[in-house]
Image (tube, rainbow, N blue to C red; front, side, top):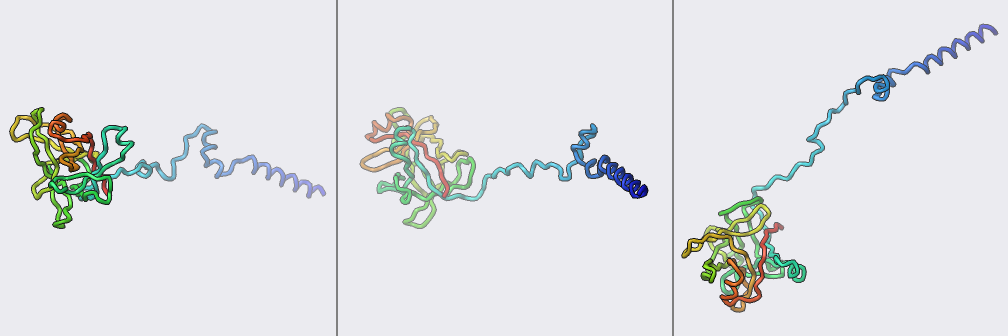
Length: 222
């Protein structure tokens, strides 16, 4: 009996000593190390910022096709009427505009980002060829600045597009010393819808244009 009791006491003492002694796994935890004032363990997988950062899309140098969307600068007009689109040449040989996107002119630009003096092209379905935007002078306005149309031609474009896709150009009048970036307008002239660049609304009014609205023309790929 004594030997059995002695054995039980020894077994109990051993069990308690095992429970009181931390295992090697417990000592390897960060919680154990912190409780002993030790530094944290080195991560098994080091942090790599490039794995979590979102890679920014780089501008593409490839040509893009889409439409030029015409947006009214007047917020009330824009909300009421919506967007317009640059349309192919009308009967008078200059670019027009339409509210029907299916009738919009197909445009091709050199690529994304800002560029100038590059070939902004428009598809001519009648000849099945790509042509360039081109500036046609209508007349010199009372302000002394030229009033100009947009048309298509085989010549190189003098138009430019900003990084945000806005169309514009630097117009140098052939008979004056002025160089300026015209405001773009849509208007009705001699019964035709036209897109025109001018220094001021009064230049267009004096020319007999009506329904004059300042607009912004922006490229949209698609």
